[in-house]
Image: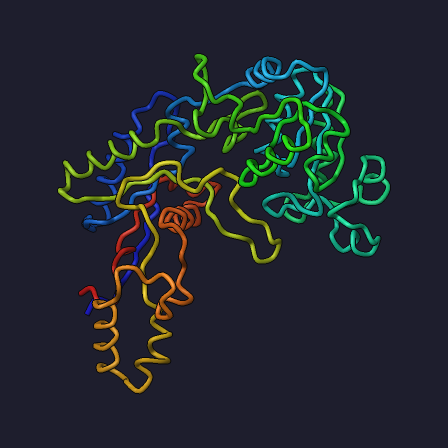
Amino acid sequence: MRTVGTEVRGLRAPIVKEGDQLVEIVVDSLKQSIQEEGYELRDKDVLGITESLVARAQGNYINIEDIAAEINEIFSGDSIGIVFPILSRNRFSMILKGIAASGKKIYLQLSYPNDEVGNPLLDARKIYDLKIDPYQYVIEEEEYYQKFSDFKHPFTGVNYVDLYKEIAAETEIEIIAANQPETILNYTDQVIVADIHTKERTKEILKENGVAKVVSLNEICNKDQGKGYNPDYGLLGSNKASENRLKLFPKDGQHFVEEVQKEIREFSGKEVEVMIYGDGAFKDPVAKIWELADPVVSPAYTKGLEGTPNEVKLKYLADNELEKLKGEELLTAMKEEIREKEADLTANIKAQGTTPRRLTDLLGSLCDLVSGSGDKGTPIILIQGYFDNLADE
């Protein structure tokens, strides 16, 4: 009987720079790992490559000046509103710097007590103590500084109102905290929707309330103008590269994953699934921060990764249908249950408690946790046995 199910390896790779042949680098790194560690590839193994590696090799960067120029092309007025950005030093901060470089006055509306992914702007308990209704009440900048200026993010130690005012210091900026999108229209009718996963609803509300011009971050830097761009996500998924440059989410990802899959098939004879992964989709249990600051977990993946898991819950079966069995008899019956499970277990009680999330979200989260976001130096992740189950010998 097999004693190991899923195995995950973080593969070390060279430091990738703009213009590098990434398909070759990824495949060579995999070959070297196989040779050094002595394992074999199997069909349905999964190879994940972090999005930053792909975007860096593509040279998919833009400058602050590029953002400013596009803002001035899109918006004709002297002021601009921004609603619901996340609180981040390496995500929205650089976008804000580019918008500020346009010279327009900025009205920045932040949600409270937390942003879209759970980063706190202020002390939620203090909101309760002050009897502030976050669904209706607008906290102007002056009031924020009177009542909440001592608040700092528990992980970063940053007060994001201070940070954003400092970043946009070259222009005039006014910051408010409010949770109704239409509040921004009391200040300006030219608006950038900066939320990530709820952007379409925010835009819809603004249009219903008479906004003159509204675009979301995925509609900025989304066209080929001889510099970095992303046709699907624009500025969403971007990261700070330097004090004047952002790395965008990778483009042409589907071609890349299919080429990697092809090269692996040619040298190994195995059908390995390939995906690009970004942020994992999980939530910190202490700070209650949801990790997913990228627009999606995986912007590109091969066809074998479509869909969701279809699994029975072993502990449910052990406590119910197979409750009276033990030892080898129980194991044999459990394997039979797995082999005979329905092709679609949706709403079947035998699957209750399993995770009905997309495979790419689950696998991408696993990749992100293994590679980390710091100095591990393993931007390529090999997952083996993920699609196996207890009945596989």
